[in-house]
Image (spheres, helix red, strand yellow):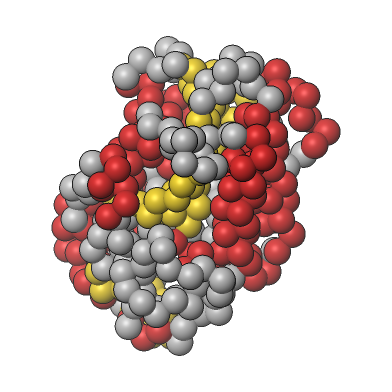
Length: 326
């Protein structure tokens, strides 16, 4: 099987490509390797992938329509696609809104167009986000819940992706599955995420900023569990006998952990205490996330296996090794 993985130099893309290669699949990776966060980290991920049999890489920007033909040639022969390329980050969207229009809307449109014109194409899996639940107060978040109150532009673009994909499934019969990710963490993680920010500050003796005075909860999901769900979804296209072949799943740990407990686990793993600065809630943020995973569990047997007491120390082990910290 030949699979396109977009955002392959990114956190989830890197791990997903490795999992596919581990089982002998051929992977075509695309990434623009932008500087939203450390290019060195992205290149370090790519360096590992480029040594692997069955992997090819193309540095292309999916939001640049001038390179559409080049991109189409690069993905020739792919049967399936896992679209993870996006401009991430709720807070970044407050100051840089056009980045999200370009990467998340135009980029998503480009991938759908590429896939629908690919001969014998079978399935497009794409990344959505738990952010689409916005100001929803009902917990856990279910795929049947309303998602018409986004509290950030990032969330709005991800919900728009879901609508765009449904329309292409309806118009062209393009099989697609959207995955609403819940707070993914682990080795090779993103430096703009809380766990990485906190770890870096603690080892450097700097205080950490804790928003909403610590009164927050997140469904922290270890990256290996996420990838297991992504690959299971990739292997099981939605049926087309009962309407447009499009579905959406939550993919999380099904545990909503207090932020302060996560910080405590991180302190234990690092062997250092954090100095905290308590701050009010940030614009565009939500107090709590919690995934109802019944749909993906019932359909695909997905069962997350990694609590933060196991996953956070694994992240710390990688973090120390990557940064050369004793």
